[in-house]
Image 1 (cartoon, one colour):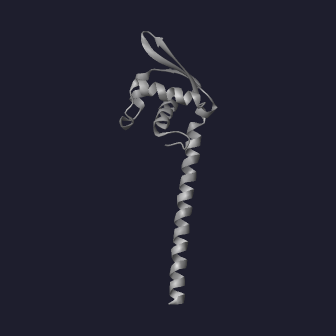
Image 2: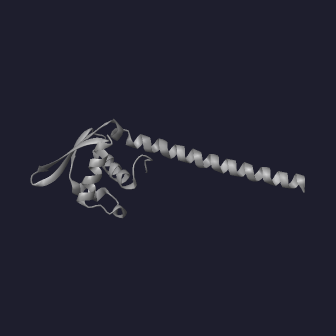
Image 3: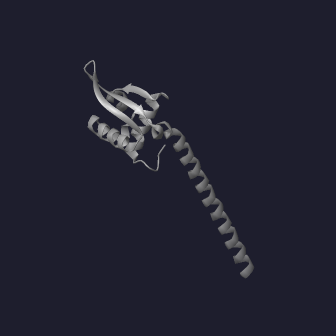
Length: 123
């Protein structure tokens, strides 16, 4: 899934945060849990992850606070409206993409058919 408004890394992190939220508006998550959910190809470390989380916070997807819990770094994440509707927006974007591809295929087929008919008529 890829949102047009987010970069590849931001999209991967947002998908991981959304999946770990379990539909909750507020939840706790450790950086290690997030890093385990992220794909290997994204090549995240804890510093990159925190930078992307801050960027997503500035974009209004969620509020996040870094804290310590039992000596382990933990993020407190409070999802905002944009964060809660992330999955629905992705589904809508995919549907639009499929419709555009279908429209392009139909237009290409129609163009080829008209070209063949004109070739037959004028030859």
